[in-house]
Structure formats: C-alpha cells, structure tokens
Image (cartoon, rainbow, N blue to C red; front, side, top):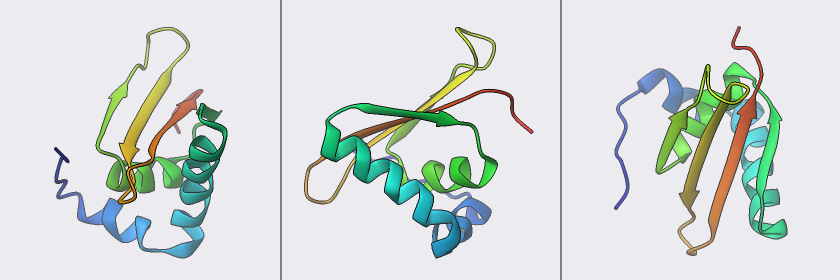
Length: 88
C-alpha cells in the first residue's frame, strides 16, 4: 500500500531535476548497497523524499534528530534514507 500525498509544493520540488536528482541518488545508493543511507538534513531533499517515499517518521528530538524515509521502487527494490541534524 502506498500513501498518496497531496503536498503540491513538495511534488513540484520532486519534479525538478536539480532537487529530485540528489534524492534519487540517495535512493539508488540505498538500493545498490542494501543499506539505509544517512546524510545531513537538507530541506529540498526532504521535500523530494516526502513525495517519493511510501512513509516517513520524524524523530526530531529523539536520538539525534533523525528523519527517516522509506519506500519501494516500481521494480520492487526497497530503500531507506535518513536525514540528520538541525532543520533550517
């Protein structure tokens, strides 16, 4: 089951190659290395991941401020990306 999101600003961000490109690269690394990829928080990457993910959890204030995103590609590959650090 996939969550349908109606965050139009985030959807527009994900359709912008300059923004979605970094998120897509993180997803590709997660799949190719079969691991959760962890990088510093970036608002534009977060916006793209919100559109691309099936679900997420914001751990702000818990265990080092980690926001986790995860999903499955159309090919069935599972991925996880964690953004850490302060939110701007």
